[in-house]
Length: 315
Image 1 (cartoon, rainbow, N blue to C red):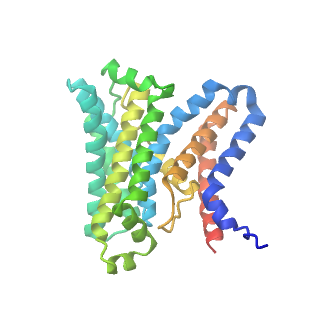
Image 2 (cartoon, rainbow, N blue to C red):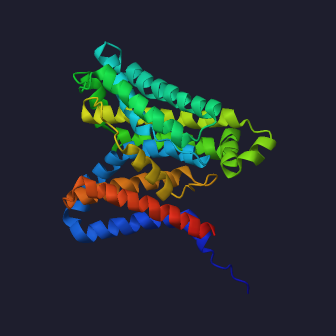
Image 3 (cartoon, rainbow, N blue to C red):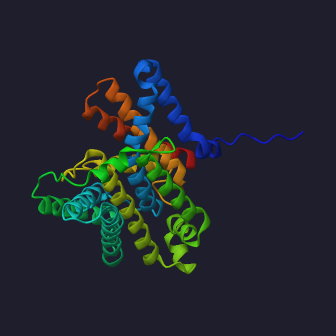
């Protein structure tokens, strides 16, 4: 009787991210189970991870075409600041959130996409520059001060539960399902994967490279903008320096989630688990009273290990 031979690369591609999350939970549970494995703390991990998951899903699309988006943290801050300013100006909180999150994020992402398309420069260079520009604009319109005093209705909405699930988590889940549908069930999603797999082949197959590059950065911008709305609601204020360094978390979420840094490979729900891994590590280290800068060391190390592992398994 023939038995199927175990294929480690396929196993790791499907279940590796869950395996990593399980190990991390076991480690922190063993070290500080009386604090880490409580219901309230597990809930807090999911809520804290919602922002990381949102920006990670946007970053996923940029990496999927063998690019990168280093401006997600600055887009988060600018979208959150615009949302707060609109609410203070008297705009209804729902419309302010839509304008601040979706429209501003999408517009900033479109700027990134247009610059990549029409300069021919690598997204690393473009988004490195726009990261500074968007951050500068945030500081200018806020006069480098926090903006608060907006509608309690806005804050209270994101602080409540829907069917016992916190609203920020519901928000992230809904976006994840929409992006899963886009990548799995639509022609746009298939073309994005093809573009990431081989840009020249995609071009000669009739795929509009510039259009799909623009679409990818608009999606990344919208996800970062929505993360800015959630972050502003959770903090109860719009901070001009919100999201500083979050591009590291976004990249780590995507890469740890199995997205190939070389393009063409990855799954949206694995990126969600990658974001949960980041949130779990940060939460666990906070419980152990480890300083924040050590957390950055851990994140950087995880990115290097994840990319090296992806390269090794691909070989």
